[in-house]
Amino acid sequence: EFNDAVATADTWVFENCEFAGTAELIATEYQFTGQSAEYPAGRNGFTLVNEGAEAHELLILRKGDGVDLSLEELLELPESESETMTTYVGGVFVGPPGDSGVLVAGFEPGNYIAVCTIPTGTIVNGDGSFTEGTGEPHVMLGMSFEFTVG
Image (cartoon, rainbow, N blue to C red; front, top):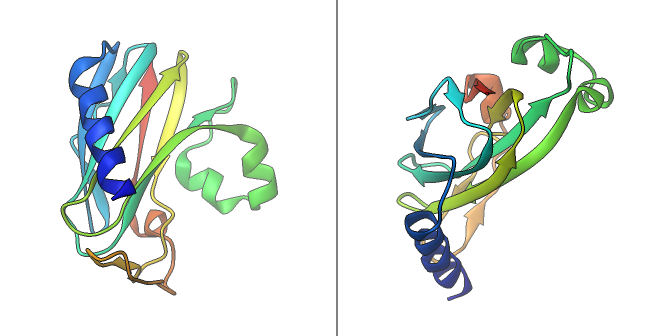
């Protein structure tokens, strides 16, 4: 019931509040679709719809000023080092197929990365039961994108 109430509220916010920009993203194994290469500065809203069999998430990180490493290069670094080069902006989780969620956040000009770090094989059923995956994170299979905020 709680998740249904949150989904109803999130949908209302996305449809009725003013945003600098919006995006409706689709999550499948193992990719995002619907994203743009650039978004406007200010408050942006992202909806994420799970059209895959596995659970997914959208985590957005802002690269630090002067950080010109690609996502692939950041992933090769030790986590303790790459964390100093990015700032968490926000995230949204979608569990069972057909589930959707909304991420609303303020975006400053800069370079951003979006990733899904859910382990491969993670399944969430409509009744809330789940199987935690043991495979590598979806981002390692290509579920990511980079974008600029201007």
